Amino acid sequence: MITNKIKSALFGATVSVLLTACGGSSSPKEAQEQAKVIVPEPVAFDYQSLIDNKISSDVPGIILLVNTPKREFIGSAGVSDINNQTPMQTTDTFHIASTGKVFIGLLAAQLHEDGLLNLDDTLDTWLPSDLLSQIQYSDQITLRQLLNHSSGIYDYGETDKWKEDALANPEQEKGNAELVQYALNMPAEFEPGKGWHYSNTNYNLAGMILDTVLGSQNAYEMRDRILSPLSLEDTFSVGVENNMIELIPGYETINGQLFNTKDLNLKYTSAAAPIASSVSDVAHFTRSLFKDPDFINDDIRNLMWGNDSLVKDTDNEDYGLGMYQLKHKGGNVYFHSGGNPGYSSENFYFEDQDTSIVLFLNCGGSDECLTSFRAIRDKVIEQVTKS
Image 1 (tube, rainbow, N blue to C red):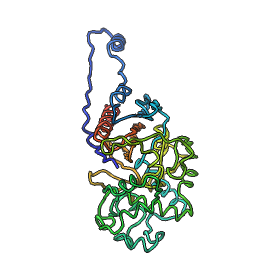
Image 2: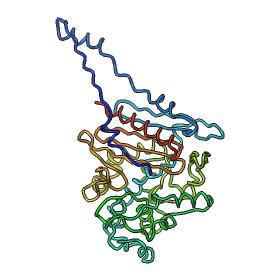
Image 3: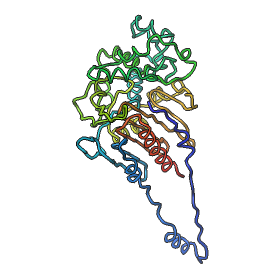
């Protein structure tokens, strides 16, 4: 997971407003005509140059979508495949890693709404005792606390052990149960409900619960309830629907060498990083969460971001079921970032402005990749929040 420092980007951006007054006219109409000539139309920011200038040996390709009520930009830069020098396309499908956690949060809320599960039941409702005996406070932790990261469960993503094992055994397939093993018998960060700690383990356990409730991979229910109704044609569940859509390569610098991590990522079926998608699909999905009454109702939105689900994180931001929420100029902003080996992503939705920002880079955790990622993100936020 890429750490979000969104508040500095939202509230630290410099906003400059230039007011020009025109005098000397003999009538209001004449003044208006002069104003039309003197005051130029605002020049749209050059997002294409922004991403073009961030392409380098460590940042092979970028896709950016910026959709506001006034204009939309969607552009790509660089290449999707280094070996073939294939130009990046705006429709290319990326592994969006933790940015996809909101899909799991939504599916859980939908199942709760339909009475197929209860978000406030404890883990022993669904998971076996031999597993729960290795998780501190498991008899007190609820599914809702998994989804909003208030469970206190250790995050296996804080160590490199799982990555080292993946690189050592690139052909080995792993699912939620195997990934949870990296977190067992570790002390809790706090008692359930007494704090907030981001943990990928939470979502692996949630994925196991959803599979138990449904009696099959939750990816199939996700397609029926989310992907198909919204016609997300560039989106698939990683590890389950790999043959449906082509995932572009992702690149990770390891010991000074750049590796293609595409096949490695496709071996993992993880509810902590469940989805591959395009920028347009992510933007459409997110907007539909808030603006499409035929997709979900207010009861489900309340399950995801109502008072019973929102928890303050360590930066005093709120986290609901799979997505952060914060206030900006009195309105809500929803966002999440994601980082898997070879892929970086971020998704923002400014609800009151009906504005989406989706950013993909096909590079992983190198310093240059992260620096470029943050620079693009912060500049775009600065532009869309100008007033």
